[in-house]
Length: 85
Image (cartoon, rainbow, N blue to C red):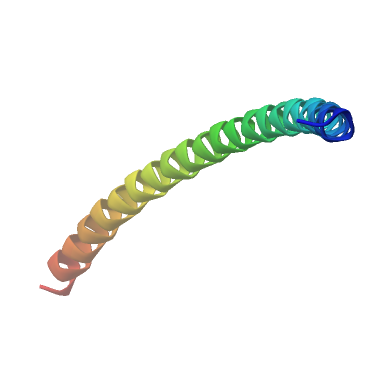
């Protein structure tokens, strides 16, 4: 191999090494951003779960109140029927 070819190949290797180092830095930055986004998503999922639990709890309370109202209406309806007789 000629000296010129060797120098050209060494220059190419050096350039590729620099590109690889830059790509590694970019990859590290992207990985950190990915980790941050994953943390944000997990926090949002946790908040969503808490909201869903709270909604479920409120629905249970509404259903309990509805059940009590139904019983009261049945009692009142029974009294009205007794008073009509």
